Length: 70
Image (cartoon, rainbow, N blue to C red; front, side, top):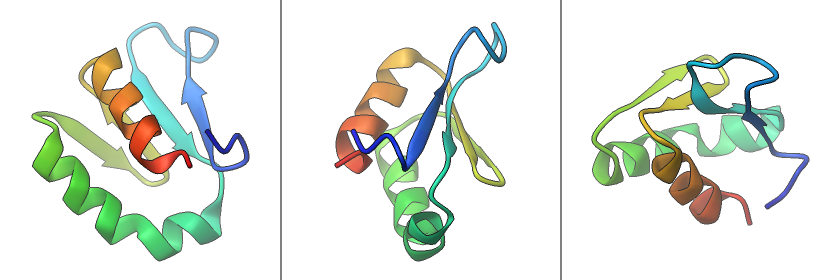
């Protein structure tokens, strides 16, 4: 995983959210549409809030990081 691209949201931030913070603005600007289309096809439930993506479970977050983290 490219640690300069994503910051996983953990219990340090909140207990109720499973997500990632998009840290690399340029990458997000270039890939936002493709990421959103991929998430809609692969996951049952996800939500984008600015540069934060929230997932319904840890497995979806892991799947996202495996797909987009390299």
